Amino acid sequence: MPVIGTAGHVDHGKSTLVQALTGIDPDRLREEKERGLTIDLGFAWLTLPSGRDVGIVDVPGHERFIKNMLAGAGGIDLALLVVAADEGARPQTREHLAILDLLEVPAGLVVITKCDLVEPEYADLVEAELEETLEGSRLEGAPVVRVSAATGQGLEELTRQIDSLLDAAPAKRDLGRGRLPIDRAFTIQGFGAVVTGTLIDGALEVGQEVVLLPGGLKARIRGLQRHRTKVDRLEPGTRAAVNLSGVHVDEIHRGMVLARPGAADVAHSLAVRLSASRILTHPLAHDSEVTALCATAESQARVRLLDAEVLSGGSECWAQLVLDSPIALAAGDHVVIRSPNETVAGGRVVLLNPRRLRRNHTPTIEMLERLLQGTPGSRMLDALLAGPADLRSLGAALHLEPGAADEACEELVARGDVLKRAETLVARAWLESAQSALVASVDAFLKANPLRRATPREHARGAVRQAAAAFDLIAESALEAGLLEARGPGLARPGYEAVLTAAQQAEVEIFLAGLRANPYSPPTDRIPSPGLLAFLVERGDVEDAGSGVVFEAGAFRQMAARTRAHIEANGSVSLAEARDLFGTSRKYAQAFLEHLDALHVTRRNGDLRTLR
Image (tube, rainbow, N blue to C red):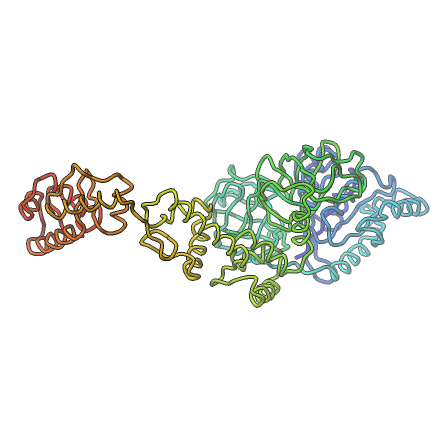
């Protein structure tokens, strides 16, 4: 369902126009009623002559409430730029027009209101002046309709024009990642928490699990409403009210995003192509502090210009925004930045949470350009160079329809640039680089620990700084390629063996001979160094039972087998029985049994052991 948004200077009749069109007063706050001034967002709905239902977001026009205006302008399909016939274009007319440009609102028309207050000739002058104001904007050449909410003049023509423009508007895309930037949160007695907003990028259904970001609060959709009518499902583009269970309204605020799990990310920094407002009066300098606004969220931020020293009115550049507080969004969303006194610039986000991007670095700028304007395949490959991703989530993150994502994936796989493992996509270049890093980490560990036969997997994962799933993929591919081989829980180069020095070899032979001479009561006074002992354990020569007790491996296996047979025949074994079974002392029997417990062969029950 399309959503229309108003825009324009304060007191130019936006709310009155909405009420005249819909019969609904969008000013819901008592303060708004008393002052005759829209402060916060208002909402209404309308059925057009074609039978099409539309939602309407009414925004405040006063300069003090520009942030509220921005919260309402995000996600609209059609803007109504409202200009009073008795005043013409004013400062907020121009600023709201600039904001519509920065948000790339798909369509718009101009509504000249209060035409009953002026002569037609004066309205002609206002319209002529507006042509100059609109020049170079997205509304240049847009239809102009003259109306009077008091007399009803032009209202039918306005609804026809809205219908006509919406006929040509692109359909809302369903990327399978339903998100609702929250503009209101309140409680209805007997129902609990309710949030409202404009649904984007996917559908919502009653009963679905959702999360509230930032924060990660989990909730379930208890009910859905569209225009105060209960529904079981809402399609993208709909003005929605969502009743939630499992969360309290005090935990929710404007700026949060209600989303399907995985549909949005929490960002602390953004890479964005900034376009400066055409009416910008003070150029934006590198490293300036600004306010970043995205849908209903806002955060203070520092802007790092990547290919310019300053950003002047009407110009463009790449920038990285470093946010003071996190914002939930997805790549492809729009962000607008403001100084304390004016709207500075805006643009489309192409990358979330990038590391510090290099300034005036051609490869970085080229990568960002590809993410913004490249083919679906090139954008997908660039994204995969940062690591593996699920096909569906990657396609949604790149704003690709499922069919386009599948086609791009098939192209990359056919070219050999991307490997597909189930639903996970891996860039070949990323995988080869990650494999090299893994092999280097294995080599480095074994060089620093020459007596170890393998590098522990967890050590290698920490060295290459990969999440568990990505590391497993890298390791398995390295094993398949023969770059590494598995040794128990560790990894090593094929054929690698630790080599003992002559002195170490002599020490080992003496130690093992002592263990074989007294298999059940091995000597404890000539234990090798920890590194050499670990080598013997990894090689399978000995079993370290702890507490300074080390058994020869063959003897330990024999002891374990005899103990198992004793328990199977008698139901359990005691410490004294184990001592007598092997003709040893309490010290060795206790270390032996505790090691069997640690190996999950036996379970201790009081003074007895039974088999697990």
